[in-house]
Image (cartoon, helix red, strand yellow):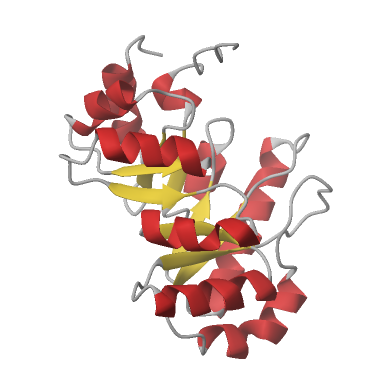
Length: 218
């Protein structure tokens, strides 16, 4: 793998199938790293920590970037996230979706959102089951203020490539059943399987930026 972020970006872009886009996950990396990749034409960046993202957004306000929130969304952070991000990848419950809808309307914003689904047992992650999502779908589709674009899922640790292909294929099939055009699937360790299964957003951090810098103490 090439050693610089710019080289990695070019190589990754060359490998992406048609229809798959690169979401550069910049959490843990400085604004200067974002600026370097943005200079190549990358516009979509993913962050999961609100305060860190806000600091980078202030430093990079001169750039026309699209900021995606990819972390677990806490109910007390919904308003700030709706204000700071144009895309939210992690609505994982009815109560959170309802709250985001109300706040988006109050803020006169209409973020694109992805519904997080959990299609395999995984105690470390939240998300809708397929059955629960299908049952709630008529109410979700009627929520004002939100533009529901697709589904997001993450593979549990320990799955092999064949099992990941099956999982991502199930997510694509569920999105198709709901007539949703987008699938946010695949990270640095499993993006080839996600891309092969129809992912439209690949959330790549270490594969693009390299390891995160160590956190300074104090």
